[in-house]
Image (cartoon, rainbow, N blue to C red; front, side, top):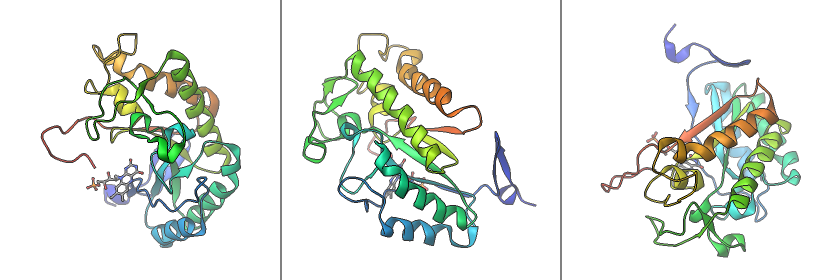
Length: 233
Ligand SMILES: Cc1cc2nc3c(=O)[nH]c(=O)nc-3n(C[C@H](O)[C@H](O)[C@H](O)COP(=O)(O)O)c2cc1C
């Protein structure tokens, strides 16, 4: 059997092959972030036949301040759990495992969509837009850790097989990771790798405590800033 077709075990989770569909935003949620029938139909079509071992669903915001755009799925409060459960059921019935990508857009959010002030790692222009967010205080950072943790608990309650923490594409955790956007002078500063990854490690530790040892936690790390003009999409 080829490696591609052989099962892989992550903790107690067995994925039947190595085919993984990465998160791709459909932007078809309701205005308040509820999963719609269109979204369920889309993932039904993708998982039909059970050929894909694992689907990582599209980025879902852990709190309203972290919403990246219209039509994005919410995992920010308990009202989202019922329809997220419908989504995981559709995918599981087709024989595919499913993980939820959980995200905070940080300085890539915008007030028009969220109705909230926009906070990022630093009050420094975002490379793509030039927008200058407010710098997160330690209290803001603690709230973010709390919100990622609660989002993970909801993902588990909704039947997801694991979570993927989004730290790519210029969103909040990428802003902390990249020296281009992290100009902090506290212990989260970008002078050392430990500083750049401090928030990531705190989130992972908190999520792990909340979901137990047998729930896979993945992280999507945007490891390159692509400032040479190539895309990081
Ligand atoms: C329409 C669209 C939506 C996407 N949404 C997400 C997303 O929600 N989360 C994410 O991490 N990546 C997202 N991506 C990036 C994809 O997961 C993937 O990395 C990208 O399409 C490059 O794929 P490739 O490496 O196979 O070329 C999106 C890509 C596209 C085209």
